[in-house]
Length: 508
Image (cartoon, rainbow, N blue to C red; front, side, top):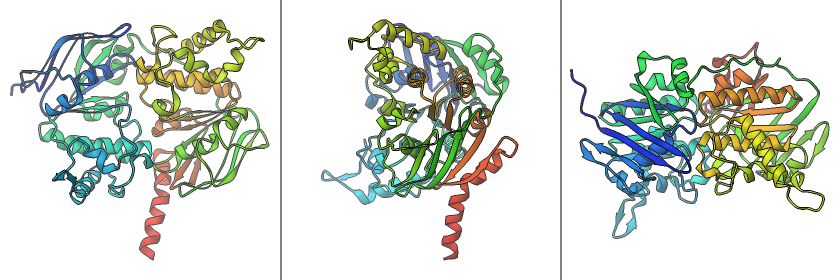
């Protein structure tokens, strides 16, 4: 049987900013195919996706859909051609309801008035397909966690009559059951002839869902493989241009007394008497489903969200933390889950973002900023984290998502906090960069810093942590060490709070 004619054909695509981002890039997609794109941060994956979806104009090259020229100049033109995209950085409008976000461009109207009963019924069907049947269509999008917002975006894409869907890191904030539901929807779309471009750093997912895999490096197409004919180590070697260096992890385990103790932390209906501690030199992981309270726990400790009760003890002394400034004075830093809105000043330079929390330390005795000290600090940490950029003066918004994440981390390394809270530290980061971040976490623990790491990837927690706590419906349901944890046990603990609630309702 002959291969079907391409749904999408791309030839010689070119795009440059300060440096070339796409160079003579070729790509094809067949109807009903999942074609994965992999590459290191800055390889050009997201830029290619933005060009396809009409958000960025190319500098050269050609594109065709079903043999017809395709050159969208806006997101609306792309959607009219049947091309839709879930961005790596969320595009949910927090002030609108869930229903309005899903059907923003096609709200049902009569005589100019929105037919809300029709809108909400369609929204319930869309939410049910992504496992959010419990969410009310009228809920403001801002009231949802990041993972739920990601599912709302996916629900909106699935509800449209698309012929080509681009998924850019769609599972970055999702848990395993939610990923399975997404994959079921992808397979249904395949059976309907929809072509899907799947951008991800998660090799296990790619090999499960993709038909073909294209590797990008420095804006170029390096190779295209049938998914069943290639192994992850070969893909990684093609992505980075060489084999990853073997790293020797430091001896695990705490090196001192309690650095941070949290007692009976309570926050509205989200957190319920959460208590735990982390020692100097220890990496403590926090696992749980979306909405379990993982992010809310870190934000409450850091003073970013109000808490209704509980105590925070730093190095044996009770600390009053009502805002992030209090946390900084106590030696606590937070790498937030949502780097775009909570972690970075996107129009500002890498230098400003890196040194933002250390301004007093870069002033001379007359109060003037020491630009050479700022530059040296920025260069040091950007080199350590392998940030790919043209210079320290480059605006952060021009960096790839993974390199933006590295800049957030660099800021807290420059601050030299004794307690570091990491919320999804490797979200949107490629395999080579993830290896760098994991080694960094171990290095920081080796320097007697106390680390708390939240991650949706259970295997990541098992790879770097000394202990893992599990949150379920705002309560700690289990604690594991390497000798006691398994994926099955941690997953069961993550569902425990929800199962208990269901059982109590049935009993009632």
